[in-house]
Every structure is written in C-alpha cells, then in structure tokens.
Image 1 (cartoon, rainbow, N blue to C red):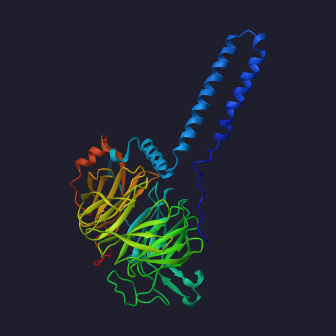
Image 2: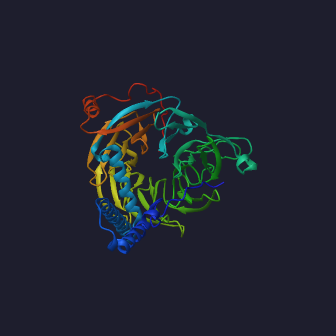
Image 3: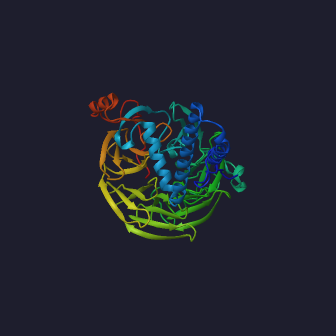
Length: 465
C-alpha cells in the first residue's frame, strides 16, 4: 500500500472563505443601486450615513484583498520562495523572534536503551531515533512531553512482506529516516539485514566484491505503530529522503556506490543511479527531478537527473563530504565536510560554492530552522552543537552536548533542537531569547564537561559513519 499525502491547496486556488469575500463587491454594488433608485425621495439620516460609511469601508477592504490576491497570483511563479517566506514569518511570530536571534538551552537529556545514530522530527509532534545494530530498535518520542511513546523492534518476517523464499525472522538495523509530509509514515533505512537469505552482515569497510547482502527500507505506520512495508534497496543503505512531490524515495547505498530510486506507489526500487565511493547525504530540488548526493570517500559531489537516471560530478570537495541540507526557498545547498571541519554553502542551480566556514571537529549531520535562518551542526569529536547564521555562515554559538553527537533535528512543532549522541543519549534543547534569564544562566554554566550526568559509560568502539 502506498503512502498517501493530503493534497496541498494550490497557490492559485482561493482559500476557504475567500470566494464569499470576493462576492461582497457585488452585494455592495446592489446596495448602491438601490440607494440611487430611492435617493431622490429619501432624505439622508445619521443612521443612513453610518451605513454608507460602513459599506464604503467594506468595499475598500474587499478591493484591497482582491488586489493582494491578484498580485500574489501574478508574482507566484516561485511558490517555494513564497512558502519559505510564510514559514519564516510564522516561526518568528511563534518564537517571538527569528531563530538566529535565539540561544540554545538544554531542556532535557533522554537516556535508556538507545544508541541513536539519527533523530528525525515529523513536523506534527513525533520524533524518532534510530538505534542501529547496537540496540536493533527505533524509539518514538512525543515531541511535546518528551516521553517515550513506543520502542519498535527491527525484526520482521519477510514472508509477510512479499518475500516467501525468506520466511523466518530477519533483523534490520535502523540508520536514518524520513517522514511523509502528513506525518503518517516514516521510511527507515536498515543498515544491514540478518536472517534467511541475507548474505554477510554489512560494514562500512565494504568492497565491491564482498558477499554483503542487499538491505531494505522499512515503512513505519505511526498510527498503528508497526512496520507495514519492506522495500528492497542496495547494500548498506544510509541516508533516505523523499522527492517534494511525494512520489519517490532516494536511498544512498554505501557499499554499491549507487542511489536507489524507489517508486512509493509501487513500493519497489525502479532504478539505481551510479555515483562514487560511499554515497551518503542527499537533497532533492523543488522540481522533484534534480538531486545532489555526496560521495563521502571519493571527496566528490554529484548531481542526479532522476528522469534520465544519470549522474554527473559537480565538484571535488574537501575531505569526507557527508551531509546536505536544502534552504527552505530551494536556492541554496549547505554541505558538511567531516574530514575538513568545514561548512560549505552552494548555489542549488549551478552547484557553485558561495561561501564556507570552519566548524568544530568533524561536523557530521546538520539541520536548518523552519525560517531558514540557522544551521544546526553537530561536531562529532568535540561533543558540541554549533548554530550558524545560514546567510553569512557566521557561528552564532557553540554549546556542549553528549559524547559523539552524530545526528540532529530541528523539531518545528515546539521549536526545539534534538541531538543524537552516539554514546547513548539524546539532548533536547530549547531556543530562547538571547536576553532571557535562561540564556544568561546557561551562558554562566557553559564550562561544564561532557558527557554530562545520565549518559552511559560504555560505547561501541567502531562506530559507523
């Protein structure tokens, strides 16, 4: 069964209630006609004057709305930019300030039986953490209360999902995830499968001729709390994202040097696009046809044409380009270079470098605020989280988090930043006004060491990229 999306209202369609407003000038015109017909016989009264003024004001208001709507239609060739502007205004209103004017303050540290490789927010109040092959679970949290909603084991019987020849228990290893826009489903990449017909276990140190088996995406139904689809992809899949039109998923296959193109309606891989060694981060532009992907061990960035099924090298990068984020207006791509300790901003249309900045030690993942003003970057070997101005790449602040921060998510429903610490915890940070008492108090205690209280002392020695 394919994931479904609620259809978005077109920018060219009137909003609910707009049609009745557009008819008001007609009603006002009818009233004026009636007054002209009877005017010579009726002397104006004070009440009549008030009514005339009210009707005139209504006509001006409706005319203004009509002009604004027409202007919006005439200038609406770039709907994504308009939407980005609306998001920025809404976020500023909800926070009381743009995200770049806020400061990060720890709200809570979450622990338990977790080894989070990534955290991913749904946008409507859920966050999932993927605990890889160290816990073989995905944990689901309520983004408001921060309570653990559900722990989902990564065990399935593939015979129940259309693979009768592989009946029996198969274990995955959740790596990364992407939510559908309606928050109903999450597609979760499984680092490796272990079970009947699975081949050898996955590893980051794979080579072209080894016997590592193909892996899969598991689809999670958030309403039912279960896996409801298994879609076969390549070997050691890492990052996964959806095209803006919601029709396809893209998966970077680390050991195959390919990107899988998955048709969501068919729930199957329909193409693979070749790139170079260790593909990881992916973004898809608003046309749902053009994508960019990092080849982490080749130190290269590629552009994909999803319709033609082709790739081309855009540039040689610094060392270990890892993660990509697209700005809300679709104009810029931000990239972390984990081996060069660098953050780079690119022109999304041309792939040309616009600017770059130094980061902390080994920047891994990042996310961007809903208003597009701040990039949140985790510095893996520094146990810190940096906030960068997305326009200037000026570092706004750097705060301490748990050990080996590897994943980060901006959670828009409550304007918080979630950090996955590979050692075994999740830090949840609030965005507060820079001049608030909480921000000042946090600044006074910024010298605390990490890992902080409550974090497990043990950790896997060989942590995957």
